[in-house]
Length: 426
Image (cartoon, rainbow, N blue to C red; front, top):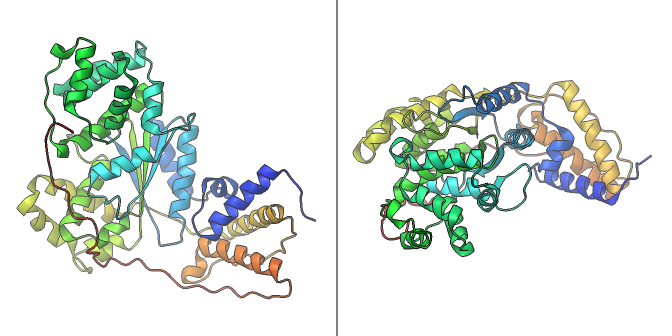
């Protein structure tokens, strides 16, 4: 017998099934099916607890890597961790490393993190909601104000405390919006900030010129993390998915990417990001194929000399990033037979309700070689089999697939390196 339930539940279940059918679990699918990666969940919980400990908070970012082959549940895990972080009062951003967001470009990764940021209690665009959540003259805001104005210690350009002062005291809503967009990664004319200071009669209190564009991304990352805490949240969790795309970059871009990964993971000892937690996913064979001296690209031997010529200052960070990847992080464990069976049972229940149809029991195929042993294949094949039987009752489907392997062939169409520039805007 099928169960009848409300339209909202049916819609949510169909949405979850559609995501699973396409191999990209959404939040509803993860909520319904849960996650069976206790080691990764335990380490992530430890990081959340550490970041919330205001008396002993570390002064740099906290990070962890998880590794697994295609289809083993890396994206599913990140969606589950996002749910945990939001429940604990953290702002959370998921960033998929791609051609548009190359890991070596902090400006683009940061912008993507802001654009994809989620808050526990607000639905709007992250940077604008943070601006509205600030409460001038509150204790948290006063702490942010004092910190932002101590530019010799925090390393920020004077444009950040100046823009914070304008945002606090100006009654120009358009200028406030421009300031918020600047915090989130967009350019702003220095003359606009100075004009705002002039309006509130504070121009004489600040002296600055447009900083170099290359200097802004790490300062924005630091400032936004503090902004999040001042707005009443515990910290900022950034989830970096598909780090293995780095393998398709040029040698120089890979070197810069390793350095950026080390920054995100808290390995840059001179750059402080307290309250920032970063989780990255990477394929299990990345280090042996791309970094190891016996692999295809031998980055362990080649990255240092290549960076020496143009980016000597980041060689130690690149080395640290490669070491992180060589250690491999937390491996995703294959699901036990009991979990496979319980997942199939829950999936059958969801499918039956979603389509008001009594989905037949399917044998939970535990184990399996290659792609057939991965949870993604088991879930998708079950859904596809029910789809066929529901439409063609007399069919006897036999689901087959192809094993996917990550390719680390260099992609020459990837975005070329950006150039520094300066001017009246920043």
